[in-house]
Length: 175
Length: 124
Figure 1 (tube, each protein chain N blue to C red):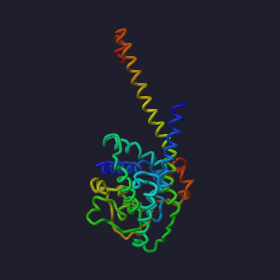
Figure 2: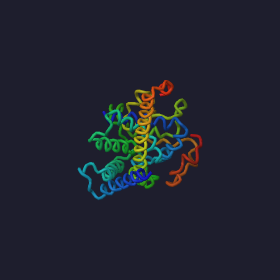
Figure 3: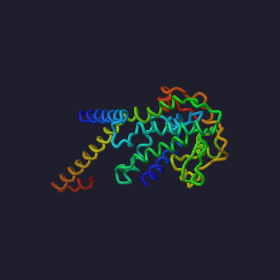
Figure 4: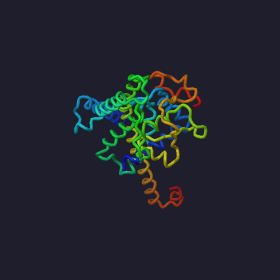
């Protein structure tokens, strides 16, 4: 219950990160990954921690104001699923793909070329894919795994850690 | 002000302490160890990548492997140590603010009752 609620809240936050130019400026760090592997999961701007916090806090308040004792299982589970989503492994969980996010689906979230009518992005799921299927933001045209990642005109995005640390504050180019 | 600084330092130190305890295996129970938990999960998933790669031509140490590896520890530990103090201070600030507003409202209300001032009630 805690897990599902928290995942929904994060899915929603994730959509906001893509929708608003200001937030996208920070979220770009995560989308600057060019080759996917498990650790790409945790390449993100430190401001994202802060953006996710308010809605997460509301989620925690809704389940009673404190994290359940077994919250560590939820955290570890989320890390494992998140790692797998970014990993260079082809897993789709069979019919469970409509519930759980997976590497094939999430690779398309990172696709450089997005369908014209969905320029804000697709497959926003964190641990669960079900939100994307419910709200029709799912998109998996094929599964070769060889698509280009990033966004259009991302060539001049800073590549080093320290430059990425301050990006979003100093430069805000179009997506 | 001093109270806030104190809270900040205390929260900072306790997160630092907690992270250190995780690194040296002093977390109870052992399976809640976040630091080593992250490493074990990472090695496991990386192992799967090595044995069952999807893109066969991708290097084991793919592009930006080490950058992302550093990000893992930065976002989960270094950043959370730095920010923990801010969050605690913010929490305290809200609590204090809440109490201040509450007592202010109470004060106005009481003074209103005291002199039965019509205008005062109107503005309450």
